[in-house]
Length: 153
Length: 286
Image (tube, rainbow over the protein chains, first blue to last red):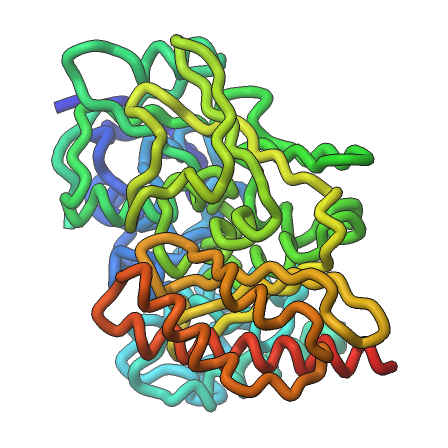
């Protein structure tokens, strides 16, 4: 099996670990780096539970090979909060009941936190994220609250 | 799931990439944006010995808008197609069709060349390439050849690309004299896989169709150009009425074979075509 030692900057810290060439970034984050906040739902790019920021842009980490992230910057849901203080996206989801089982939530938090800074319409922000519990109403309300807070700053 | 173990190589020159693809005694797969290939790897439907990652190969991205043609590097992302002002002015249908693909996370990494080489039967960009009369430039150690888009896909997920070849560029003529639009119906869901779509090219005069190009997605194994439907449209008022057009389209598409539910998909494509004509007719009347 082909293995490469790769280093990426994860949530602000350089992390070096061996990665089999055929492993996805999502698998690498969860197994080698023990960052299990990133969830793997479908493995095909449909559900969005595994979304992380790669060099600052949201991507499905199940559709990127770990070796492709060598030397690059990754932000996972664990890196969104400000220490023990939840991020605004996390607070908005809690306030508006934007989650139930929580499986899709890590990807949504990463996506919403990114969109709050870089802009995006409601349709665009929720595209690429499946939630089987909420019917999306709570998530949409959370996004509107978050967007309004960002506008108020 | 986890892919069957393979070796990943990321060449930093085109020549090195071509050599990696041509290495004897092992199967090699080019990796573009990976948005379709990685799931095929992890579901073990594709089991190459080597994955040749083209991300670091220089010269494969970018859009050059010339007077007669638009040249687009095969590794240009759909996001770039969506947001390129010069392309939007020259061939607006390309950016609009790119924006209809999947969702933003996917479009940020998915590439034009990858979409054409993946050759999904309902994919948007292969159909637009056929409608516009594009050519796919293929390179290998053996040389360079250019394949018309309507002869590129040979079936569902199969193309004329040889294992040692890779797409480097797609060339779109600007001289068709037609104005193209793209319409599709997607299933509900985050990704929204298309059921069927239609790329309609029209040249009109006084509210009448002078020339038409109709290419449908999802109804066959490859994008289907429908010359019979085009002929029925020619000379008709754009806004209609178009009696019998839908049935004629369904019959013409059915003659190509295709998926089991191809008849339903062709009806969807027919309705999309009628809506597209109604939209265009309204535009022509304004």
